[in-house]
Amino acid sequence: MVLNPESKYSNRRTYVVKLRSDATSGALAGRLENLVTGHQCEFSCAEELSAAITGDLASIADERAADADDE
Image 1: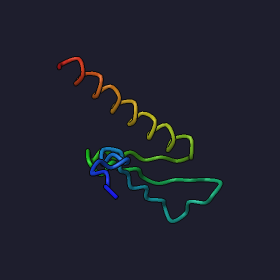
Image 2 (image 1 turned 60 degrees about the horizontal axis):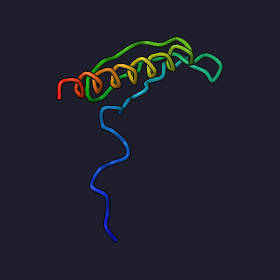
Image 3 (image 1 turned 120 degrees about the vertical axis):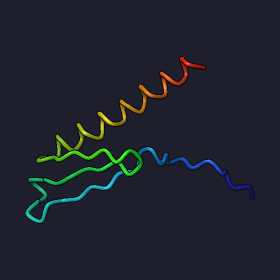
Image 4 (image 1 turned 180 degrees about the vertical axis):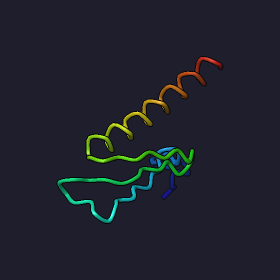
């Protein structure tokens, strides 16, 4: 058996989600941090958390497109 040396999970997409001590399932609140870039943002609901991740993934796609254009 040969193992694939390439991970399916990009390190660039590695996040830490820290929830506030008063967060509940109905009211998420906390901080999201990208471990590679160090970018952090606060969120006060699940929609904001989702939007932050979506925005970060979009910026990754933009970076890859720019890199492909440079080649």
